[in-house]
Image (cartoon, rainbow, N blue to C red; front, side, top):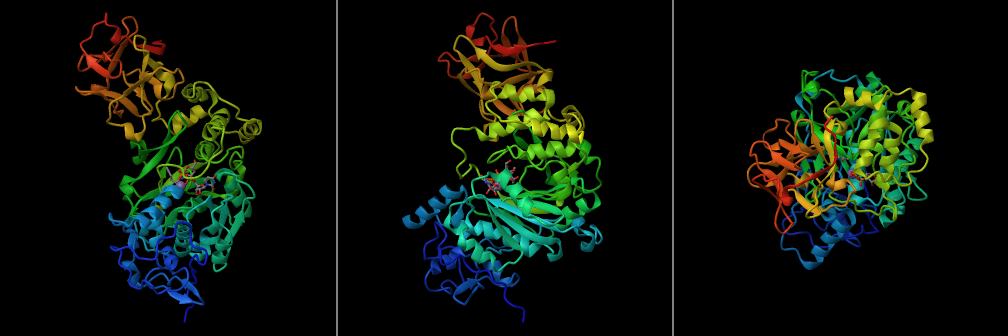
Length: 576
Ligand code: LR7
Ligand code: MN
């Protein structure tokens, strides 16, 4: 008989914030209590071994992937885990602790099998015979997973989903890079567990490196011709790997990303969209990554929405790249610390230095999206800004100024970038202008704005102010004392009369001035600025932008050039 696949539970060291002994009322557990004895509480829920688990040699082992009985377990088939509303105070404390440490619901994750099944989100097009080169003609990959203090069950589920859903001949190894975690389960416990899985290598950083240098460390230990990076809270679905490797086999200058499905941070439910709903990556002039629907010009290149699509940028965490091409591109700027910017660096240079960046709708990998970063960054440095300034210095040419405007021209100490500039020189890469014109023509270029900077009302010393985050859409635009540092007070008046930042536009439909995604068809987003009278008049309503008597609110009123509460100064006005 085939030997059981050993997936020992995390015992004897209970995972931090391990759930209590009593199973939760609404979550049925067939064999609750089977893994009896010391640490059984963790085994029951924490090991996520599933109802079919068994105790072998004192440790709990997960069942082989397959028995239909598993489909009854919590979270199986990507279903949500819903905790009861009437939790005991003890349980509530554990749930809260899990959220605090991870910024997702660790407690819920601990209830789910580390080898849960997932739906197959692939389009029928993806499964047509002969769609990909045969496995024998595909390159093998090393999967590199970097983590800093990742929750135990979430990390295991990432690893198991790769092991279970990758053809063995295509998976050379999994390199787990521990970026100097201090949670207990990342020590011996991890080694002991992974000793059962010969394909898994553990590499430890000897100091906190941040995810960028941790990835480089992982690459040095990788032996396959293709590198595949994943975040440490992912789940791969059936057939995720072949379509990625297929693209690289056909052209090693192609860098590929799977579709990133959403694993709910609260219930761990697996959400996916069909091929028609695939997004591509962009960025804004804060040098922040964002998503867009596939532009029309790109749609026209395809017969089927499941075909790989060109993407101006990648989100960063989940992609495959030919190792030699990655090295030729100079990997990442190792001066990037902790988190951020590296995804744009790799995106820009892939395109500018002879490669292609694609999103492959046939490949689906889930990722837990969080609302905040749970771990420590560095004190005293704005890490993300420092990374972004390095990025701008090396790759943005003249366009770097639009980013600098956003940070009030305060670049800070960004270290030495001369080696990175030489690299770009040596590779003979194309200009950023070429990239914008060719790869990302949709991006709004601030230089084409008629006016930019703060919109200030001197009478009140208030400025139009909003972070313009997704949360701010459809809500009233605020006011804040003018600070002259750009940021939330940086606006642009476009040639076509929009007052905008990135994709957010000032919009008035008769009641309040709100933020709304720019639609480009004037209407409620059409404004006219008269630098002489300093009035900002709205096109369709003919009303003027004003400030309330108490100086706290934006409002729209009958235009009157004598009223001080209607007079606005755009920091830089240049109609030429
Ligand atoms: O110091 C650190 N050391 C690490 O090893 C900080 C983080 N990490 C690890 C961490 O454990 C995780 O596995 O690095 C990975 C990414 O960190 P997250 O998950 O906290 O960040 P994120 O998901 O918001 O990160 C997105 O942007 C990052 C910085 O640019 C990286 O590129 C991430 O890989 C990227 N994640 C994705 O692309 C998944 C989809 C998110 C979106 C959009
Ligand atoms: Mn992540």
